[in-house]
Image (cartoon, rainbow, N blue to C red; front, top):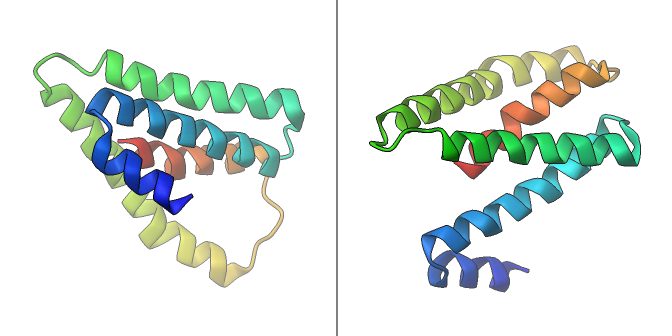
Length: 116
């Protein structure tokens, strides 16, 4: 699997690489949806909404790239704050039962910056 990833990373044109990354994010979002206990249909809906958000980001991100860079900065900032402030507190408190909607939002914070 690592060989396929590295081959895609270094040999695919940028549009194909973006499609490959979207497929990986879809697979990750499907798994995250199952982690949220959404069931099969809910997991697919969550995966499609996550990929739809990313496609909207790329489609409506602006032609000059400045708006896209601003959105990317916000996504990375939210993700960084999450990993630096929220996750340590989460682990220190040892909280295991999380409402599915909060777990779904956490998935977006984790998955969306991966595709940017």
